[in-house]
Each structure stands twice: as C-alpha cells, then as structure tokens.
Length: 152
Image 1 (cartoon, rainbow, N blue to C red):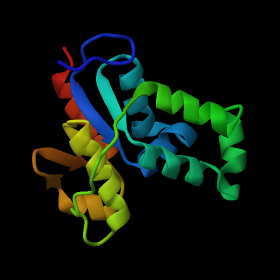
Image 2 (image 1 turned 60 degrees about the vertical axis):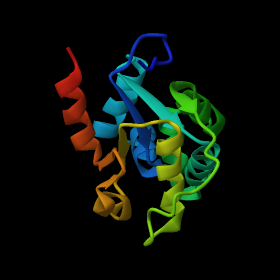
Image 3 (image 1 turned 180 degrees about the horizontal axis):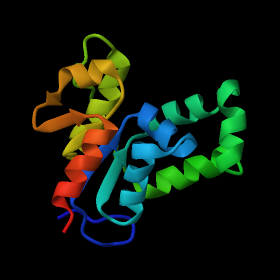
Image 4 (image 1 turned 120 degrees about the vertical axis):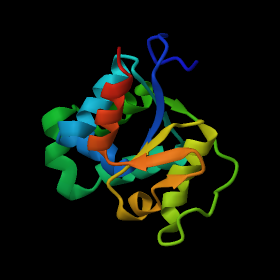
C-alpha cells in the first residue's frame, strides 16, 4: 500500500500533468482539490525531474508572474510546496506512447515509474489516448469524482 507525505496510506497514485499543476497553484478549482487530497494523504502524487523542470519553466513565464505573486511568495516557494507533496521518480526511458506530442511521453514515463493509477491532464493528446496499459488518463473533474468513490 502506498503512503502519502504524512505517512498515512493513500487511496490512489496519481501523476498530474503540468497544466493541471499550474491550474491548481494559480487558479484553484478541481485541480486544487487534488492538491488538497494529496495533503490529506488520499492521493500520492508522483512527478519526475522532467515534469518539475517543465513546471518551473511554465510558472516562470512573464504572463503568469502577477498571478503567481498573488498565491505564492516566490517561484521557488511554489515549486517547494508542490515538490513536497510528491514522490519524485526517475524514469529510465520514454515509452513513445503519445505520437501526437512526444513531450507528453514524460508524463506517461513518470506514471509508469511511479506505478500510478491515474494521469490527470487537460491535454487533448493525453486525454485522447485515454489510457496507457493499466493507467487511466482523466480530466481533473473525473479524478475528483473517482477519488470520492474510493474515500471512506
């Protein structure tokens, strides 16, 4: 059974695509609910160095700077907050699963290495894939619904 950041057993292992993490950190809604579920040890979030690098690059974009400042004292603090909720895995290969956007293979690789149950994304290439092996690919709203089904 997997354990979350507070040491409690978790219900699901999940990889959040960068677009979902950005939404969670800067806007809230369903993506933010997934971060809260991780802090409550209902989810174990998995990420990788490639996904963390991508998140840092996106959050550093000038058009997001003022939004980031509203919620986090700095980019480094936002990154530390998120990384602290995650198990960082180190994939050794990319699966070649997403022909339409090879950058999305990093998401799938993290999910494979992290033995994730779900990939949560807003990316159409991943969502069109629907699943990779036993890993389901869902929207944030669907992930929140699935989490509600497994909570006691």
